Image (tube, rainbow, N blue to C red):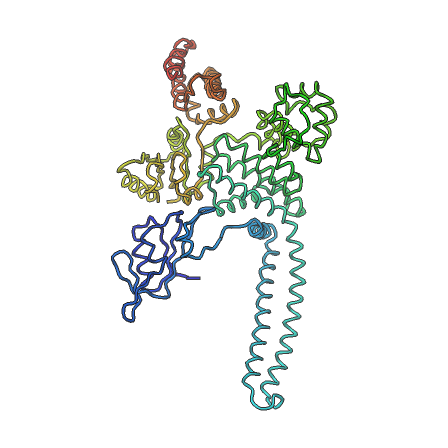
Length: 629
């Protein structure tokens, strides 16, 4: 709209005020981007239009300067905050426009992308028809305006005005022709739209998945995802999903895209989520998809969220099993009994107390058949509701089972952390961000990957006075194509601003971390995964091919490596039992594992004739792991 005259600045730009001053004086548009909820107080006179009349001039005082105000000046302000709350002083002085994408709008945009990739001819016809219809309608408007102009300028008898009569006749012919073309175009457009609708299920699924991603920002401020990156992921999913010939039906092609893209979104997102939030994301994704297919009744979903809150106990049926069902659980059962699909469950406890108690006391009620005919009556969603009513401690396990049955087993088991695969999915414009957990340092992994790829990596730990050093390293990396790793970015949030170049960042979670960087970057969490299998897979991935081939005694090395991974994974898993596992939550990290791994190789190479068991036990047990306790 403003073309090349637009000046783009942000609050951290050194020349922000100078560019705004030039815009005020010369009437140029200025875009102030990526603001937060608090604006620079220096902008107050601009927002308030505090103009002073000095003779024939209108003057705006900005700081210590008096600037001639040009009425062509415009100030645009944008923010990446999802739901910002500005003070009344700011809201009353500006015009606030919501440009956030809505699900229907995103669905239409993604439908165009699908059709353009799958049926490019169809999408071109659609675009051409849209232009032709718009041009035809504009031509009719122009003809009407021309006739009205001639009528208003006509003098004397209208029938004697030959120019007017000829124009009217020509206009009638043109109007009939344009109307005919418009009717043909609209009929063709209806046929094209019907063909495009075959691909709408893919657009619906992908738009649902994006808004599940977008909602994760409410869980943790570090979970920020940009729409541009999501569209790129959608295009990649479509390319990967093409496994059969091109002459398949639209319905089958949509199924392929949905399967591939849903899994891609899950894997892409999980590498940037903390372990505690991965099941929440998978469950939310599953429920949103099933809700769009009308498979999750609203009453059952509300019960899963709120339980029996708000039950009037005065009108409540008496609790038949007070010795093992407490008042809160009976409130849940009463509320569950009001849902049509579960009606009669409260009376079932009166009739089959022994069977229900046996189910209630089982170690895995989500896998145990429900008493009576309830096992065959309820859906998996209703099973979660029953678990939520009586055994709140097993809801997460039941949710995992629900996701596994409805989306697939791969959605209940987060993918192992693979830094090489994450690097391969990046480019020189995409920062890679490690979201740190206590006791975890990803520096060794980045160094190992750089060594495997024969790339140089420069490391700078941010802190007081390190900004010039970091800037120098980034400029050097841009020229030479090397990597730059800026550690502890959370300590310098106010500072944050060659095709082989990569920028690696690490930071602890912070609500003030720049949203623009989070949305552009690939985020990775560094905490240990949950489960012995997942932990062992991650530990094995830490050993590169070169390290794996270093030891000369291959068979002994492989067995001891398995034992070391098993032992380290056991120590990590014991922590989830809290005081039953360890009295104090000790931090066993990857550095301990790496030291022990190197010791295994050293001792095996030094003692080729026998396995030095005692020599290994002492440094492993006494010096490394148990020295922490």
